Structures are given as structure tokens and as C-alpha cells.
Length: 503
Image 1: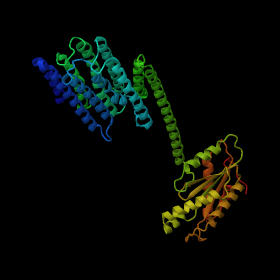
Image 2: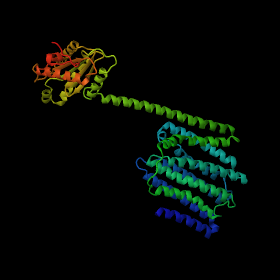
Image 3: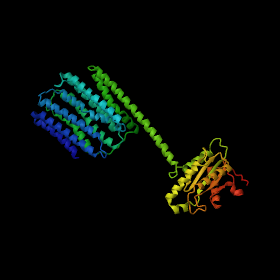
Image 4: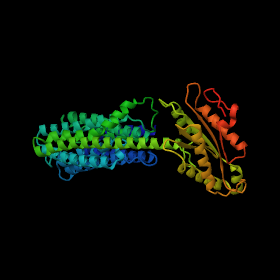
């Protein structure tokens, strides 16, 4: 509550001083103008410190705008006191009163994502530099260094200031209303508070005070109007941010953020058109630069979006790959095995039988207990590599089922061929000669269960998986280091389609 009281006290003091000491009115107004500008700059510094980590560097752009305005006021005071020039619109101060919007305009025109791109900042700096040149040309095409010659020139200056202030006020207000982040909301609240009040008070002061019979500071209490924007900014930056009860629709937020880069380009285009009568080459060049700038920015933004979409698709594919890959062996995992079995089972036109091999490393718990889990992991990786390089055809699919178990899906393979494949794999693993003191043969071996079936609507992949698992169990019960199949169960083993194997 203390800050609003401070602001109200400053306004009251300014009015009282102008009424009580009219002879010193100009000096009083200059003193208050510099004071409220300094107070606003302090508020901006406070807001920058409160903006979190990392600090929001846009506050420095607002600070630069205030500093440029203060330079304009200093040049105006110089005209009055040093050069004894009472003209209300000297060219040097008018130029800075127009130029001061440039830093903030750059921040208002920067979209949240594009603002972090170097190419976007480069385009903004080029357009901002061109706009500064246009400001200079336009200002001194109306007034001279000593000021406006005649009432019409002063009116033209006033309308130019109105155009600039109102455009920036609208742009800042749009950015403030269409924010979805707390730091954006805080920053554009301050910018809107300043430029909306500055546009209103500046319009009234320029047209109804300066051009209404009171051309000098200090001749009217209405001078206090120029305190209001700076005090509004001071209050917006130092008071605690109020709770937001309304949030802009997401579409509106994205629309304003995407359209914001056009603010700077449209300013260049507008002032380019203004200077065409006196400087046609510069004006037309500025208009072309504005169109090229916004077009180039849009094109580069589209390139970035395409690149980002490509990166996201690639990341999605990589993540999807990780979901189906066993991290230890690099083989497909159980989830991928289930997906492959389901895919093969329901493949259109599938007529040939589907074979499944279930593989278990013999006495693997004893191997882990003897050599440790790191050696056990290395053993599994070695077995996985051997399974991959031996006996598998292009259409076959191998996965780690879990623990020390592996599985091979062999589409279009009947049971005898699947048994032969299993025997090749068993022999390959034994030939690795991985030392295993607790194995009957002294090296690591595997047991394999084999099943094969034709896909049908009466059964599913789970039935094939259970059949292969039962065959593996029989192989282990028979002494390990061997291949078991459905036929080993003879009359006790039932086909997946309901008929019995004959053996």
C-alpha cells in the first residue's frame, strides 16, 4: 500500500508546486519528470531482480527505453536553459522521444521460442536499425534542430508521436492479455501499464495542452500528466503480482505469440511509407526490407518447426525402439516377442506353421553364484551374440524372454525343421566353451523346447508359447543340454487345433 501512496504524493506535490510557485514552473516540471523517470528505472531494476533465475533480460530493454527518454528530456532542458530556445519541438529531443520505443519494440516483437534463436535476433536488429534511421529521417523532415516551424509542423510531430505510442500500446496490451507464462505476464504488465497510460496522457497533453495555448513546461498544472506513465510503471513493477482469474485461450496465446514478430516489421513498413514523399528510395527500400524480413523470419521459423518435428519423430522412434529392446543383451525383449507372435499369428494369408523355440541356460543360478552377476551378464551377452550369428534365417526373430531364457520365432517352419534349428543352436552354445564348473560337461549349455502350430481362430499365440514352455520343461527334466519338442509328449501332447500328434 505504501507505493500507491508514494505515487499519489508525488502527483499532489507536483501540482501544488506549479500552483504555488508558478515562476519556477519549468524548473519544477523538469525536476519532477527526471525524478519519476528515475523512480520508474528503480522499479524496473527491482522487477529484474524479482524475475527469478535466470533473470529476464527483457527488463534491460525497458530500462534502455527509459534511459533514451531521459536523454530526450535532457536535450529539451538544454534547449530551454542553455540555448534559450522556447520552441516546443526541438529536433534533437523529438528524435529521442521517438527513438526511445525501439528497445521495447524489439522485446514486444519477439516470440518466446524465436527470441532464443540467433537468426531471429539478427533479423530484429537489422529491422530495428533501419527503423532508427527512419525515425531520424521522419523527425527531421518535419522539424529542424531548433524546432517546428509553424503550427502545422508541430501538429505533424504530435500525430507522429500518437501513431508510435498507440501502436506500441496496442501491441504491449495484446502481449499482456495473451500470456501463458508468469514471467511474460509480469513483464508485459509493466510494459502495458507504461505505454497505455503514456499513449493516453501523451495524446491529451500534446493536443490540448502543448498545442492548446500552453507551449512550455510549467505554464499549466497539466504537466503532471507526464508523471502518470512513469508512476504507473513504478507501481506495476514494485507491487506484488495479483492472482490471475482469467487465462487467455491457448489458441489466442499462440496466435499473438506467432504474430508478434510482425509488430517490428509493420513499424518499419509504416515509417517507410511516411518518408516516401521526401525520400522515395529509402522509403521503398524500407517497405521491401519489412516484407523480406517478415517473410524470411516466417520461412526460417517454418524450417525450425520442420526440424523440430523431425527430431521429435526420431526421438519417438528411438524411444519406441528402447521400449522393445532388452538393455542387457541388445536383443528384442518380452514385449517385442509378444508383438511379433501376435503379428505372425494374424498375418493375412498365413498358411505355413509357426515354430517357437524356448531356450534356457542350464544351471545359470550356479554360474552366477560361482562367478558373480557381472560374469553372468557377460555370459548372457555372449550367448545372445552366438544365437544371432548361427542358424537364424532372415524371417526368424530372437528375443530375450527374461532372466536366462531366450525365445526364437521361426515363421513358415514345421516341427522337424524347428527341432533341427534348435539342435544347431544348442551345439553352437556348447562350442563356445564358456567354463562352468557346475555343469556336467564343464561348460555352459542350453536346453531348448520346440513347438510348432498353424494359426487358427480356435487358438492363439499363448497356446504356442505354453506348448514350447512345456517342451522346454521336458528337456530339462530329461537331463538338460538337449532339445525337447511337442512330440516328446507322445499321446499326452495335444495339437493346438485339438488333434493329437502320432508318434
